Length: 376
Image 1 (cartoon, rainbow, N blue to C red):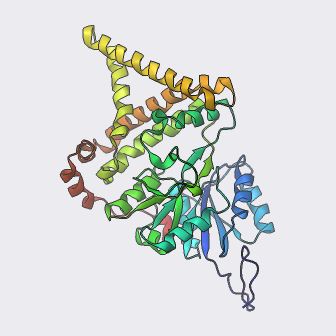
Image 2: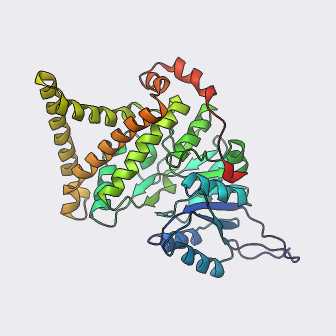
């Protein structure tokens, strides 16, 4: 057997396929702006084994495919596949189907991962006690809107109780456990296959849906602070609205399938939307009370912007924080209400969120089988 260096593929003398230790799975769709930086970050991975980088393209209409094909000619570890389903979940399954490594790392095309991301993830998996290891999601903006979103996500109002955005401790602090709010991760391929892969009925929130399946079987989802990766938030308010509206829609669908995944904080945004409707529609004291509540909410978002000022690179970024927060909250709330209308009210999840666990736990076994046609 002839082997190359630790970061390159190993080929047999007979021309067999390379021996792979970890496969990196990345769905892409119109990622021209970020794909070069993403590939470069992947190629900088300091991993003691051998890597392959699998990209599932959902039919990009910009230069994404051209860039990938050029980089594949330069680096034989890069492999490109078509993703007819066009969603993140179908793309992950396409890549998983072709993965050859014992380990798989799920990476996004608009995120830059630290050079030891794979190494840290695989090492932690080998220590046992978990089958899902990830790092914090660290927002890093590049224009006024995305920088404002990053600042908003640095506040409790933006995080919404999710620990996937990290904690205020140093990078070297001890690992901690996550709920269904997760960001990417490193797994043993056999474990992901055993759980059925990513469910393609979830074009959004598919990681949380799969996390719901892991948690239902008593798995621990471990977050390692040293694996923190830089994520690029949406760079327009319209894009931010669409993103969080879809998050709300599919969060409800996830709660229907896995009642234990709903946090109390998920209820605040739809309550805010209902309060706004009450302020517009209700007469008399009830309407005044609702309007008072909205004024208090506006004051809290302004205070969040003031507190974000010391962290802002530009003063205008902090001024946009209340706007970004309002878009995130109202979009999620509208999406959650649309999701309830589309998929039904997640009664068991609501009961579980307020502490009535028995009904929520009883409903978990009724979840449908995983729908993953791209994996077959």
